[in-house]
Length: 145
Image 1 (spheres, one colour):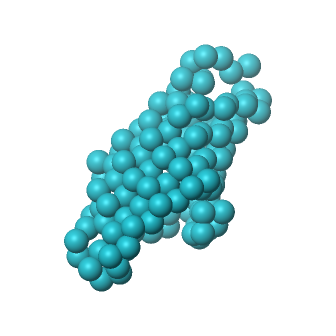
Image 2 (cartoon, rainbow, N blue to C red):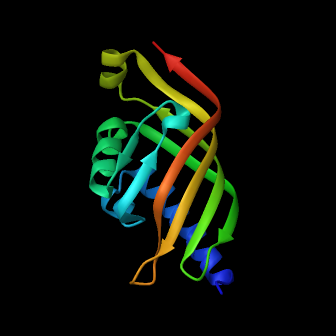
Protein backbone atom coordinates (compact mmCIF):
# COMPACT_ATOMS: atom_id res chain seq x y z
CA UNK A 1 0.00 0.00 0.00
CA UNK A 2 1.32 3.50 -0.80
CA UNK A 3 2.86 5.42 2.06
CA UNK A 4 4.14 8.84 2.98
CA UNK A 5 6.90 8.67 0.34
CA UNK A 6 4.25 8.31 -2.37
CA UNK A 7 2.18 11.17 -0.95
CA UNK A 8 5.32 13.32 -0.90
CA UNK A 9 6.25 12.32 -4.48
CA UNK A 10 2.79 13.35 -5.70
CA UNK A 11 3.13 16.71 -3.93
CA UNK A 12 6.56 17.22 -5.50
CA UNK A 13 5.14 16.41 -8.94
CA UNK A 14 2.56 19.17 -8.55
CA UNK A 15 5.18 21.57 -7.22
CA UNK A 16 7.26 20.95 -10.37
CA UNK A 17 4.11 21.48 -12.46
CA UNK A 18 3.74 24.98 -10.99
CA UNK A 19 7.42 25.92 -11.08
CA UNK A 20 8.04 24.65 -14.60
CA UNK A 21 4.93 26.36 -15.98
CA UNK A 22 5.78 29.67 -14.33
CA UNK A 23 9.45 29.60 -15.39
CA UNK A 24 8.48 28.37 -18.88
CA UNK A 25 10.59 25.22 -18.49
CA UNK A 26 8.49 23.30 -21.02
CA UNK A 27 10.76 20.23 -21.01
CA UNK A 28 10.43 19.95 -17.25
CA UNK A 29 6.69 20.60 -17.48
CA UNK A 30 6.20 17.75 -19.97
CA UNK A 31 7.85 15.35 -17.51
CA UNK A 32 5.04 15.74 -14.95
CA UNK A 33 2.48 14.23 -17.36
CA UNK A 34 1.73 10.89 -18.96
CA UNK A 35 1.61 10.66 -22.76
CA UNK A 36 -2.17 10.11 -22.65
CA UNK A 37 -2.82 13.23 -20.56
CA UNK A 38 -6.33 14.70 -20.57
CA UNK A 39 -6.72 18.40 -19.72
CA UNK A 40 -10.28 19.51 -19.03
CA UNK A 41 -10.89 23.20 -18.33
CA UNK A 42 -14.54 23.15 -19.42
CA UNK A 43 -15.74 23.72 -15.81
CA UNK A 44 -13.68 26.94 -15.90
CA UNK A 45 -15.10 27.99 -19.27
CA UNK A 46 -12.28 26.47 -21.32
CA UNK A 47 -11.67 23.38 -23.40
CA UNK A 48 -10.87 19.66 -23.22
CA UNK A 49 -7.67 18.43 -24.86
CA UNK A 50 -6.27 14.90 -25.06
CA UNK A 51 -2.59 14.03 -25.47
CA UNK A 52 0.44 15.50 -23.71
CA UNK A 53 1.94 17.05 -26.87
CA UNK A 54 -1.37 18.72 -27.74
CA UNK A 55 -1.84 20.08 -24.21
CA UNK A 56 1.69 21.47 -23.99
CA UNK A 57 1.44 23.10 -27.42
CA UNK A 58 -1.86 24.78 -26.55
CA UNK A 59 -0.75 26.01 -23.11
CA UNK A 60 2.57 27.20 -24.47
CA UNK A 61 0.86 29.18 -27.24
CA UNK A 62 -1.59 30.63 -24.72
CA UNK A 63 0.74 31.73 -21.91
CA UNK A 64 4.26 31.23 -23.26
CA UNK A 65 4.95 34.96 -23.18
CA UNK A 66 2.83 35.74 -20.10
CA UNK A 67 4.01 36.25 -16.54
CA UNK A 68 2.31 33.59 -14.44
CA UNK A 69 2.20 32.44 -10.85
CA UNK A 70 0.48 29.18 -9.92
CA UNK A 71 0.06 28.07 -6.32
CA UNK A 72 -1.53 24.93 -4.96
CA UNK A 73 -2.51 24.13 -1.39
CA UNK A 74 -4.15 21.52 0.81
CA UNK A 75 -3.74 18.30 -1.19
CA UNK A 76 -6.50 15.76 -0.61
CA UNK A 77 -4.91 12.49 -1.75
CA UNK A 78 -6.90 9.26 -2.05
CA UNK A 79 -4.87 6.27 -3.20
CA UNK A 80 -6.52 3.76 -5.51
CA UNK A 81 -4.30 0.70 -5.19
CA UNK A 82 -0.52 0.89 -5.27
CA UNK A 83 -0.07 2.90 -8.47
CA UNK A 84 -2.89 5.43 -8.75
CA UNK A 85 -4.35 8.30 -6.76
CA UNK A 86 -7.02 10.94 -7.07
CA UNK A 87 -6.00 14.35 -5.76
CA UNK A 88 -7.87 17.62 -5.23
CA UNK A 89 -5.76 20.76 -4.85
CA UNK A 90 -6.97 24.19 -3.79
CA UNK A 91 -5.37 26.58 -6.27
CA UNK A 92 -4.74 30.19 -7.18
CA UNK A 93 -3.34 31.43 -10.46
CA UNK A 94 -2.29 34.87 -11.62
CA UNK A 95 -1.67 35.58 -15.29
CA UNK A 96 -0.32 38.83 -16.74
CA UNK A 97 -0.47 38.78 -20.54
CA UNK A 98 2.36 40.25 -22.59
CA UNK A 99 1.84 43.79 -23.89
CA UNK A 100 1.48 42.47 -27.44
CA UNK A 101 -1.14 39.86 -26.50
CA UNK A 102 -3.03 42.35 -24.31
CA UNK A 103 -3.11 44.92 -27.14
CA UNK A 104 -4.36 42.34 -29.63
CA UNK A 105 -7.00 40.73 -27.39
CA UNK A 106 -7.91 43.35 -24.80
CA UNK A 107 -7.28 40.67 -22.15
CA UNK A 108 -4.70 41.90 -19.62
CA UNK A 109 -4.80 38.77 -17.47
CA UNK A 110 -6.62 37.29 -14.51
CA UNK A 111 -6.48 35.99 -10.99
CA UNK A 112 -8.39 32.79 -10.34
CA UNK A 113 -9.24 30.77 -7.26
CA UNK A 114 -10.49 27.22 -7.44
CA UNK A 115 -9.50 23.57 -7.60
CA UNK A 116 -7.57 21.07 -9.65
CA UNK A 117 -9.10 17.58 -9.67
CA UNK A 118 -6.39 15.19 -10.84
CA UNK A 119 -5.55 11.56 -11.45
CA UNK A 120 -1.95 10.51 -10.76
CA UNK A 121 -0.33 7.25 -11.77
CA UNK A 122 2.99 5.68 -10.91
CA UNK A 123 4.81 5.14 -14.21
CA UNK A 124 7.18 2.28 -15.10
CA UNK A 125 10.18 4.50 -14.22
CA UNK A 126 8.76 4.86 -10.69
CA UNK A 127 7.74 8.52 -11.06
CA UNK A 128 4.25 9.74 -10.20
CA UNK A 129 2.75 11.70 -13.11
CA UNK A 130 -0.53 13.43 -13.88
CA UNK A 131 -2.80 11.50 -16.24
CA UNK A 132 -5.91 13.67 -15.95
CA UNK A 133 -6.41 17.21 -14.73
CA UNK A 134 -9.61 19.22 -14.48
CA UNK A 135 -9.67 22.89 -13.46
CA UNK A 136 -12.65 24.64 -11.93
CA UNK A 137 -12.84 28.18 -10.55
CA UNK A 138 -14.80 29.38 -7.54
CA UNK A 139 -13.90 33.00 -8.27
CA UNK A 140 -12.31 34.54 -11.36
CA UNK A 141 -11.14 38.14 -11.66
CA UNK A 142 -10.55 38.97 -15.33
CA UNK A 143 -8.76 42.16 -16.23
CA UNK A 144 -9.62 43.84 -19.52
CA UNK A 145 -8.05 46.78 -21.31
